[in-house]
Image (cartoon, rainbow, N blue to C red; front, side, top):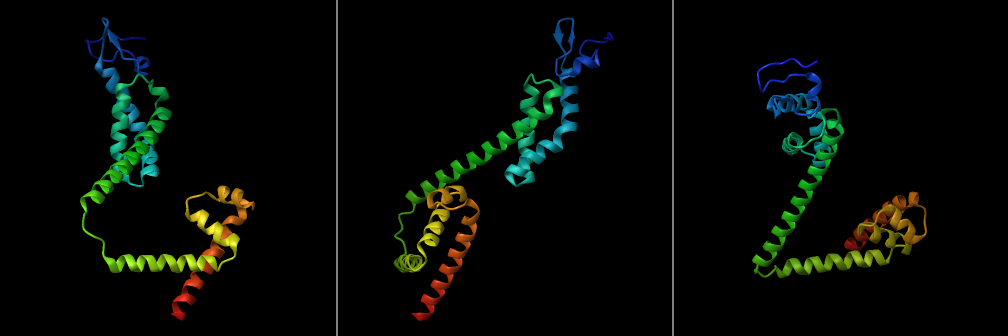
Length: 195
């Protein structure tokens, strides 16, 4: 079983299951480092893959993997249970990174909005108002169910929510919205050519 050696040396491979080896009552760093290195070699690509699917960036995913493995090194999770723990930790850490990025962006936008005291371009404001009026007029010429489906879907409602609101099957929402978009496009083109 255990082989006696110098203090600080791993004495039993079975002890390496994330339980630090004890030598004369003291925990050895070698056992912990050995487990971490083994788990890292085994699970690194999976952790990066999970984070990359969430973030869409391999570089950011590698940063997340580093944080996750550091957290694992501080945890008491056994090496045998590391794969699942690491995958969940990678997903949570990546999602937290996205959330913190969104919060930072919204703060930056809010600060930029208060810092910009320059008056908006009047011509741009008029054009935007005219474009909105054309879109509203085009929507009013569409069949009501199409117009409402289009507005609801572009307001952020899911297909299921649009279907429930309009008492239609969820499968027909996509078709209705696509037809509404096409009809609106035609209306806007026809209205623009008649001006």
